[in-house]
Image 1 (cartoon, one colour):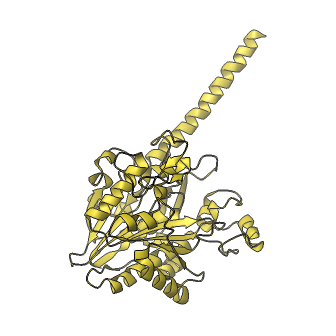
Image 2 (cartoon, rainbow, N blue to C red):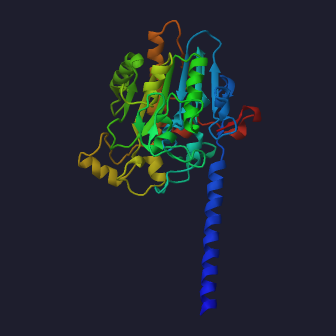
Length: 389
């Protein structure tokens, strides 16, 4: 009897080790998967966030900083994607710009994966897909699905309460790993704080005039399909909102003011701690809703979910949804057109420091032709023109 019991224990241990090995291999592959980027010919330089905060060197958050300089005097714009990697329209929108943009005047700086560490894990307990894929004319392009916050392997332990610097406002414990709660950051803080500090230093050293942070949000969340603007950007935000709502978007793009009493967010802290105008853009992502159905790649990319639709029928949502859902093409297209329109109105108000770009497909083009049409094939590009995020 005792021998039989020992045999069961050994067998159970072996089975457990097999599952650990399978899971470990999958986690390792996801954490070390690299996404190729083929920047447009307008690229003039690629820096690292460690160029602005040296302690990031060798960490997962030493992200690429793509600089596109027209050579024509003007202003400087910063586009931030990947703040929350569980919001794929943001890094995909930044990638769309980086691979297609032509800068006519001034400079454009693009960060595709701002919190790269958060893209190396998925939200625990949520059964997120590990990867998602975009269909292109040359095959499927693979991307890491991520979490909202920095990977705990890179930032641990969390405090019982996160005390924001420098406001000393008390926030939730996990917000020490939330890139959009740690602005303006600090050089001697946790990894996420050092990451926002690096971007704050980038904004100061590169003399950024306008910074735009891309996001997605659940339809249950009231800050939805909107621009959140610092006082410096209110005119640009208002004109962008009115123009795109009247002329282009089926679902209106609203605008709201950045709360002065809520700290750590890019739209507040960039404007307060640098000379730049700061704006944040939100678009609907049904996969983030708590009342969703199966959490898979289909839901992530199509934005179709019968349970979220049912919530809409009961007036529980802040954005409309029907059987068409919120496809990734719509979400990325909205971000692209919003960013381009912001630069257009910014340049009208800052005639001495304009930023003029072209070549980036907008809302109509992305929906009609699909996002993948505009993604570059790394196999067709010279090795020296390929970078990895």
